[in-house]
Image (cartoon, rainbow, N blue to C red; front, side):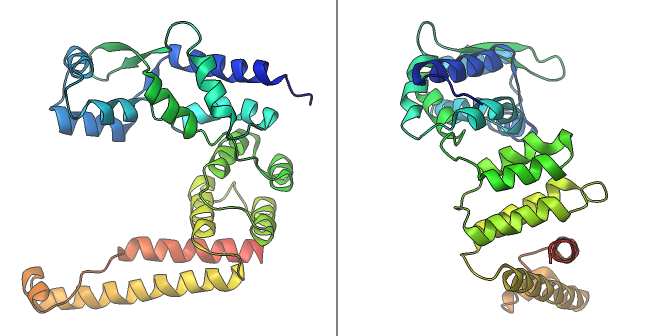
Length: 274
């Protein structure tokens, strides 16, 4: 597919961002919880007053959260990002294109009849927004081709967004592992996003070593967590939590059920890939 001229591609992405914002943003449960716990369940009007008050110490954090590009936003931008292969230096040019004219605006819809809030995106917020899109992370073609050939159509864009958000660099053995994962994993029988989340979190943690061995090491840690949790439950039958803490007993850092679920997922991934 032919790529557009530099100025045109910057304007194209900026216009798409502006369009998404104009269509309105839905507050995630996490953001709504932060707003309600920090500002005591404010109405849209009360929140507008907070945002207009530049002296409010919570204002900047609030705006940053409201305009955080979640997966739903990123999925709408993925096709453009994949097509144009932006570089880090393009971020400033996209920001300039986004603010060519009046500032971008959005509408926030609050649940339970708490009102609607219209607000403009400040330029400093837009700078963080664009940075979090990871526009310069060009996804490996082999992994993308494997996704296109083997992953369900309805999940492909979401998979690519999650890959774009990875923290670590994809080395050759990680690329090979991901290709095998997308080709061999049964996404119809297992929750695709839970399993991909485990895989990407795991790949972010390890270096360029033996992936099979690293998976088994991760499983061993989970097994140890299960054993510690079982031992702690036994101790709780004999003493209360306060007494155990005074005795220097540490509470398990991983819930037993979570650890068991993680073991099952590691086994499923290992059997599929290896």
